Amino acid sequence: MMAWQRLLRLAGLIAAGVALFLFFTYLLFPTARIDAVINRLLATQGLSLSPGASKTILPGLAWNNLLLSSDQGALLSCDLLKVRLGLLPLLTGRVALGAAAAIGTGRLELEYGLTGSKALELHAQGISLAEIPFFKTVLGARAGGALWSEGVLTRAPKGVNGELKLEVKQLEFAGVKLGGFPLPDAANLRSQGMVRVTNGAARLESFTLEGEGIYMRLSGDLPSGASAATTPLNLALEIMPKAEFLERQKLVFMLLAKFTVSPGVYKVPIRGTLLKPEIM
Image (cartoon, rainbow, N blue to C red; front, side, top):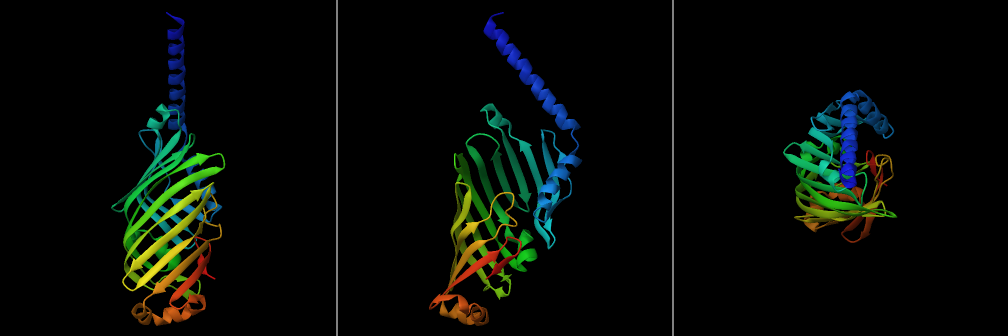
């Protein structure tokens, strides 16, 4: 047997040994420990996750009827979430985790790269805002519309960079209240925008909401990373109602009068945190 053949055989045996070791470690490692680690990390943000995870046939974890909650109540529900080690990226020398979630009739797929230049790839479509409890729990509001999003983030020496496109079809909301201030109810809005990430800092780039008699634009810095739930918000909502829209909801606009920057234009600063947003 030639030297290169012996090396290939040795490399194959080592790879098989490592694979078997990881497989048996996966089989023997209790999910209760994984649940404990996840909940310790979430607890620092005032969050909790239920129920516990179960193992999948391929190396990975699954949650049925997942519920992410805070002290205020439910924030996000998911019929099924699966997180697995990506096998195809391994063939190219990358280590990545793949996640797939079913949220009602909507779907979300995400790849998170632990190594390599690609940090994250996201595809989401058909996610009904009405099935996301965050809006009722945090904003006390009713929301509707179908969310679509996709984008790629890559690593660079100074941090992660990239863009995530957003679109909500037939967006509607009613009863939104941030701190002591309400926002106007609106329906059948055309909305789209982008989250731009530059050197690890995320910014919402002009998310527009346009409908009959109303035009709004939301922009500003977004919290990200492990402390996103408790990082202060720095957003601004510009509201430009037409006369008939303003007349229908004049009480709301009377309360927002202090934020008038020019005739018919309101610029509302949104502060607080993701779980407790406020108009300041």
